[in-house]
Image (spheres, rainbow over the protein chains, first blue to last red):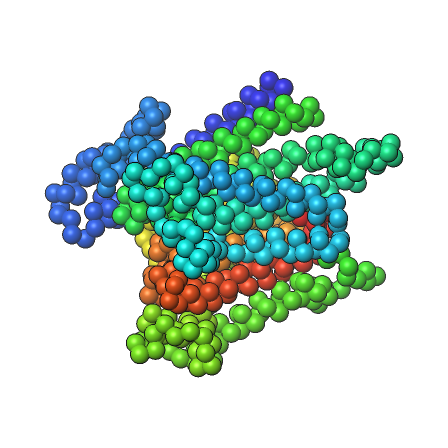
Length: 313
Length: 288
């Protein structure tokens, strides 16, 4: 088991190193001088030169790479060009709305998907199952930003229950801030619930036909106990995996949803960084998000190892 | 969906005919073909010009003259939805083509040649650690916003997914007796790859490519909506929704119809994809 863990750990380090390399390379594929591109057409030659110095673009590519990696190892993600603060700080300042948006969306998605998925599998082939399977497919086809606008049109513009945008201003209380997250979280949660529902249904179907489920039934166990205690328990690992990965992928949805609702989160920071060509911020955000994804994957693998003695890597 | 699985004794040659026997997949196929035809024919069937301004008619609701209403510049929303379909579908087709070429090459090489497997697989793992929209945004930011660069960015984003599928099938096919036989007969490796392996990984590739098609429609819409993709002057479903966003109260139809077009397109592609998967890849047809 220790050997498997070390194998997996080594694999994760390699993937992390590749992620860092990809993030480094992405900015280098910019046609022309990145410093000139970042500063726009009005920049003077002196401005461009000073930014080149600041970004260390005058060094050779391998040197730049080494100093980038060195900075990362010291926890330095670089300096935002536009905001003039360290990228790490910029991301942290914007973390709160994104964090709660992700948590709430995930809670909403799971609260819908688990019961629906389990019932769908249990009632396989019935009208309920067909309706829910169809609904999940439709939900997976809806762009989250469009659903957000539809909800906004109805609940914020027409009914006036919510503000259409913002995070409640500088002095807003926690409750006020969370109130601004309701519509964004519902729209992201609904869209994400589709994937988790499909997965829950599939992995429940897998176990519901297993021998031990039949045995449990033949012992005269109540249906509730059979489904929840026996079937669900065994179906749970793949379901937890997909929930974990959805969490990492929600950041994608958060980028657009935060922009729709004008939330000052990491997602809208990324979009404004792209529009301002603030490359260090884009790099930092890419790195953090991909790093989290790799880490979550690794943790899931470790959980598999711990939970299921048959798993070996 | 399992209701109509016509157990014909002989294998029918025409994939399209077999797909058409599945009601949901057939409906999906009809819808996507209709959307494609309407988009291609947009210049001939659209009732108005997609760009000509008509300020007197701005923000009119849906009516008999303007089925989907008019936008903030008085342009016909129905016309623009048709023209947007041209852009969005063209981009998606180009993305799928690029991703398939890259995915097939990477997948075949890493699946067939043991030495190349580990490095390519790790690279694929690393690429897949980035959420699709985020990586695409970063690539477009680096390459510069244009339709071509959106295609390149999304092609790079989706290539690893296809590569994984091709690799997995190649690993299986590689060990089959006929490949061994071809090797024993000293058939050149490139011929084994194209004649024998590629043909047998085509089915899972086709299934996955259909899903990538629908993902890239959604992703391109997201990028255009954010204003970091195709130029806002070119009508796409995403840019139309981003305009409609400013008129939620006065003219919500501006964003209703392009959004509806996206949902219908993506949904029909998913129906086709599910049908293809059930037909071609029975191992995966576990009601997912």
